Length: 267
Image (tube, rainbow, N blue to C red; front, side, top):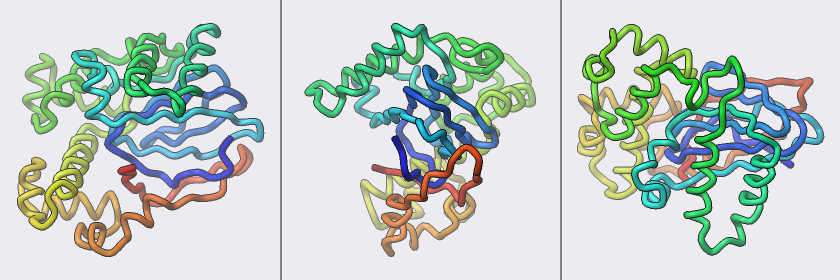
């Protein structure tokens, strides 16, 4: 039952929320999503999100999963974590998922349990009128699946693979995901850049090129636009830790708030 919340942020890990009781309003990219007890809401890796407000009786589970461990556990079905969901499963199925989530901290095989939870989330039918899971436009689904295996593919190449006009690809992606395709691809490169620097600190230019940026200056502009600071400041001054451990008091439903610049959460 949250008394505090993370400011708007994003991370490389996929995440889903089980709303056990009460109601909550989330900011997901450019969209505002209202949820209530018995619903599931998931976020794509790199999708900025924030819990804008919640009722006094709000109770939820937020389950994040390390991408590499989840891929190992889910095998060929790992791409299913990269599909946005807003769903209301059958009551019995939802109770089963809540029981599984509540036991994760005490579970010795948490990785396989989370993989099973993701499978259950993926199989949930989306809420009517909400683009989710099987209800996503086919162009968005194909785009997400392709980018999951080749994040550096250009929009024109994506359109060719999906047999669609590039403008159509972008339009449906923006409508379904809440962020533009260009922004999503830049966010994936940014997360890749951060991961590369974490694994091999020192040469920011080489990391930027390996992450798919055309130049370090392009990487710098994307980094500053998303995080409000230069890469050197982020990695070398303790700013990253302060951003990752920032919390705000939880607002009520009567005081829906926007949030500051998103920060990456590498926990």
